[in-house]
Length: 216
Image: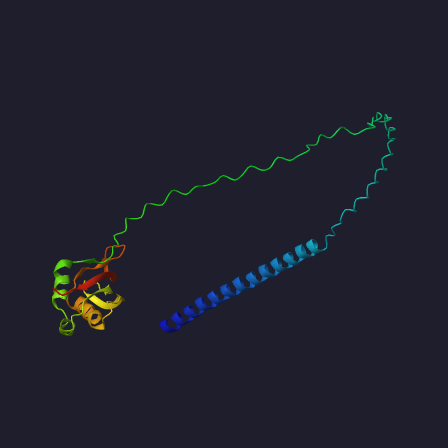
């Protein structure tokens, strides 16, 4: 019996809670509906207000154009003074003769330095008495047998070493034997100081002399 009472009292509590929840829901719906209607009415009022725009301003009248100002007449212009023109042109001075132009200045170059003295010289005999005596001593044997005497003129070319390079008879003795012996003797025995050029270097030269063949 006590169990049935507890069950009945529990159901009542549940029923009371459900009824309370239903009242809350119904009240919320009621309040929400009223709020929505109020919002709609306010929106209708707002949307139905007509805003009248002010009429555009009337265009202002343009001011009348300014009246043309009267320009003052230009001041009178005085005529230019008369120009006097000379009847005769001024005299022109002329020179009868034009002086000649001044001669250009002469530039004299400085004198060239003097050239060094030349050291050139001809060939000269070296101990001529000795070798001339040897040539005469070498008397040709045929000329001795035939007792031929005479003087031979010879011209020789002296090389840079001081020896006779070549010999020619410039004046014949009249005997070919003596002429040939004179040139052979010059080439064999004669000695010279060689000729020198301008710089002093030995070079070829010429020399002329006579050879006399005489029987004792």
